[in-house]
Length: 178
Image (cartoon, rainbow, N blue to C red; front, side, top):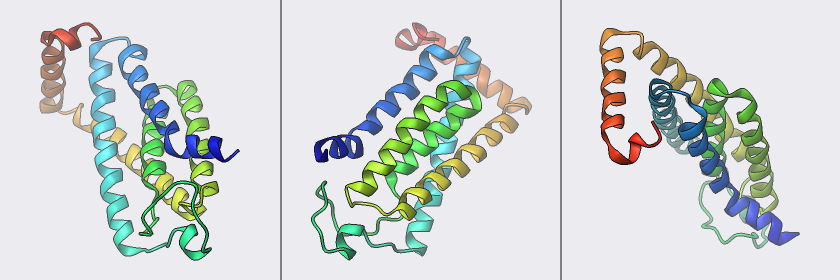
């Protein structure tokens, strides 16, 4: 059972990233939608990351293996566990995908929950650390989605989107997926 926990806590987030790439590359029908989705992911990620770093400076939550004096299933530095970077990443990607593809995001949500639970069972995070990562990820996703939506309604935002679409279509590698 420990091997399953270690795998889920350490590596399952890669599947969430792969699912995100699939969503960007194959679920979007047109280049404009892909550009809007990618911009929302970038803005959401930046906002979530900034919020998590600020929160980490304001609140310290020692990792469970430190307070419980046990060996964690995953080797880790005994630093601040709040908020969980794994929960932040998977929570942000899942939440931003929800705005574009609700049913698809539900599959990502299942993985996100499994990862969070595994990190708690591995004793590298407390439930508060996981919840904090998810909350900042969700806030980042909401902000990213609505900021990009607002930007793309402005004349310069429409121009930016058109330029990015042209750039993607002019790039040989991207042209195949756009």
